[in-house]
Image 1: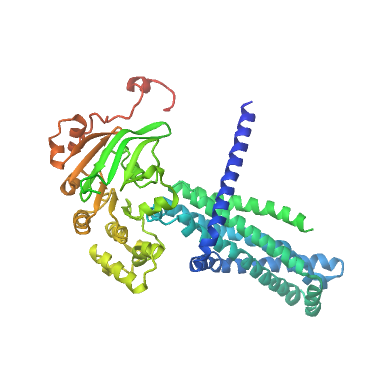
Image 2 (image 1 turned 135 degrees about the vertical axis):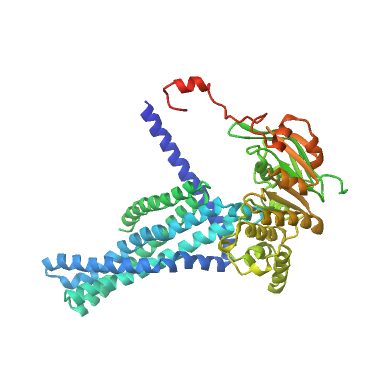
Length: 255
Length: 271
């Protein structure tokens, strides 16, 4: 009986949390037109979330591409179709690996930075100080950070794909000796615009989800050291689960 | 408005947090042009009172009238319009950590006005000069000492030329020199700019040297009010305990607990 009650309560809590996030999302969207007027603030956040994540995204992209080249080569060789490696790597990266891994890395690098920054601003009264200066902190601080993440995510994912393909080529062509001409021409022949659309759509939606989770957790963090730490942890965990769940939904929708 | 009418008028204020009453029938008048101190033991809701005056919190019942407007009923743009007439100094300064000292002071100007850059620069330098930190304009908040950060926050609070300046615990954690500087600034700014100052503090000695009148709050009500000298002559027990810094009195030394002897002999863990 008590178990049922507790389950019921945690279900209600989860729904309440979801409702709070949804309301916050609506608030952000309503404030977006005004925030767009001050593009300098957004540009700075694109830099913070995007440019500062570049190194980790590029390194990861390179290794993921190289592993893909190695595994793909071993698998395709069994069927004597190593030339299809370019095609396999491109489809895998564009449609699936780039958006998902970029989103997970984004949550770990930019999401935690956003959450802890906002949480600390709350804990050190910076948000209250803005309210007292008659400046709406959601509009001045939260929306630019949210939009910065939303803009940066698809760009990072595109860069991830690019570097990943280079990595696959490095291992497949340079190391394993797949013919360079067939590697690229097979890729060119089989990749369609819809593959790229799928990847970019996923990246954009993951960008909205990860940025929303990060700013929501940070803005509503308990104003203590413990609260900020918790908000940061929750950002990563929630983002990861939500991204993988959304990825399944989107993949089945695109097929 | 005639000059003796209170600029902040609090009537029969009730406010509770999670069922615990913080204020229960509080009446406070703040006279324009003067420095009014709000004192009281920790946990009497001094900071909460500031939040009620600035509309960051809303009372359960009673009214808070600031400059003729009922704060409890203001929302959105109207509340922001009133807040533009108030400056507030937070306990730790609350400077925006990603902006330089100059940009912190310029922040309200940039958000609320379209002044040309040259004028903004002059206004900011004037305010920084007033708090003695014009030379620190290029520093970041992390490079400032606690006292300096508070002075920068003070410059930021006065940059929009407010009518009311509110200080939340401005003396906490300052060395004697910084403390003297802040005390002098409170007096000087109040008189030079024609402000009304509200200072929340529990530093009896410091505050009585600068305040024109004092409110002492205890258990949700005004325990004593008047000029600082009157307070020292006040016979009430709570005032004596507070001013004299006595460990025990109406505010007990012991947090409410079960009987000492019983608890030592019982085996259950503390609740």
